[in-house]
Amino acid sequence: MVKLRCVITDDEPMARKGLQSYLEKIDFLELVAMCENAIQLGKVLKEQPVDLIFLDIEMPYLSGIELLSGLTSPPKVIIVSAYEQYALKGFELEGADYLLKPVSFERFFKAVNKVYNGFTKEKTIEHQPESIFVRTNQKYEKVDFEDILFVEALDNYISIHTLKKKYITHTTLSSFIQRLPSQRFVQIHKSYVINVEKVTSLEGNLIGIETCKLPISKSYRSVIKELLLK
Image (tube, rainbow, N blue to C red):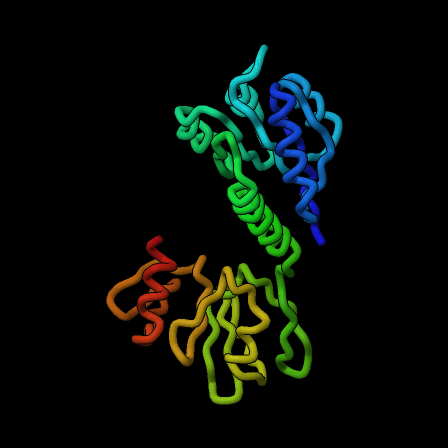
């Protein structure tokens, strides 16, 4: 199990203890430091890797907002404050969540679950392969995912279209799509799977990729529009 390395930063001892007690109940969180102010936190961040900060706003010497503003690539941050007026500023600084004191365990658990799910998703994407080997002309050839424009079904074969060439291989479209990264490739028709990063136009029931116009089946239309126009 992936564990998030956490730091609690709050100038109130009882607030730190309360968050610590919540954190210790959750198996995917690991407390690596507790800080009384943002200056201490800044030192911790220089000394060890941190995945998640629980950060108070109003603290002596340096506020949580001032610290966040000065970090170029901060860890995930959940702001914990007694004041609602800082919520907008916290989200502008890409805070993962904003918890108002006193914080219930239910609300705390919801916030850390959201961060954990995003973190594990990022790690999964990071470890996905960037290419695939396909058998064509009695040999295996490496095809980079970023080079694929679209894949076309041809009975028991498929044609993989790239900018440079086409690869014909003996497999079905339904089997091949299982080998493609789902965040990049989507089916638009029983005969076509496209690389969404290569789409150049959407006109009626046709998707443009380079010089090709591919049909969108009615059953896929709403999904495609939502994906491309979000």
